[in-house]
Length: 415
Image (cartoon, rainbow, N blue to C red; front, side, top):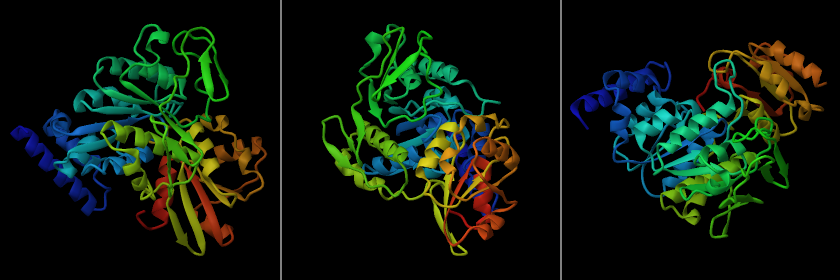
């Protein structure tokens, strides 16, 4: 690296270490921010010489990145932003901290994918899904699909692993022109993990006609855009690879959605030459992802933490949660998005019949929504009050970004 980049990298590592030592955070943002101030091209310099995978989408980025890192780890050391700092400062900090590694797997905020593509020149990009998220400051999903497509057109040498079940992702990964000609471009590998949330993809991004669905297939009623045939498919408790071989996937992470994340990880790792049979056993070592899915025993309760930030992820969280007392916590701070109207797109009826507690800065917004959905609830002011309100045994906790971190802090431990 140039001398300026070496100095910037060293300062980045030092700043991150000081942040951790001072208890001000894990240093995954501040280190990269300072490094980029010293050398604006630091991310590009740190990326040079590494085979890099980028993972982007609205939901599942952090978990898929962690699973992909485990799978690619079959080949050697992997640099990754495991704490979820998914903007260029976080990428820079992660690469600087890791030192020289042959591989890197980076989670990328969907808004920054084009910028990070330019800086890192990755070997492969994984496109997971697109749905509404933080609408007070984020783009509509169709606009995001357009940005992805424009970015990928400028990087035709990049391999793409994309979700065949999401019409917006398929359109973004397909070169412009006649969708019938481009539906199976040679640089794209399709995976199918199922898609339960459809409310953001009823309109064709190509022509504006209605998207129809039946039996796992989807197609546009006005143009040739339709679901491509996937090479990687979730089937039962495992994954079918492009050769037709089935691999049992034993995860410590809950929910069918994480089986889909595992299929994506195997598909991305295969782009680096990793055989599924070698990678699949490594996926089972992942137990917690930045505190998500972690289980903590406290005061006779087994507490499991689930993160949910938008309607699509709340739907999956309900699928993961056991039929047990459940604490819901909602904030509306800057990282969460200030608009809570998305609560009315979530169907809370799966919670009927269990003890439901609510807390957080916007607990009363949640209270109104639950009342509309005929879900009885109890308001508690603190996490400690919640623990005292439920009997010994399992307590499911579902919270959005800052509420999740608040509860982790109240547990008085780093997970």
